[in-house]
Length: 105
Image 1 (spheres, one colour):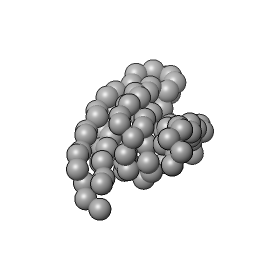
Image 2 (tube, one colour):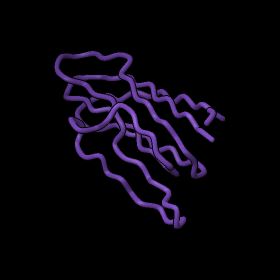
Image 3 (cartoon, helix red, strand yellow):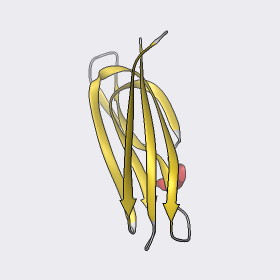
Image 4 (cartoon, one colour):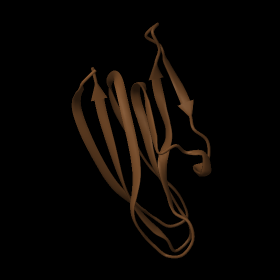
């Protein structure tokens, strides 16, 4: 297997709640990795994968919900057609995340 494309997505979130970005793509074997690259304010901020859409061998899509922020994985490898990247912040907090998407053949 070889990496055929790499995408980098960076975004930020400010204030209490989840801040997400969904990336749609042609179905392919994908490895996604999340990293928290900066924060302000006290308390916990978090970066991870909130969910993705798995392309099944039948051609149908299956939504995979990865739960609330403590259970978000930092990486996943699957046959995906979409991935939702997320940052979790508290009140008076900011966070910056970097997300790497590798397409494999």
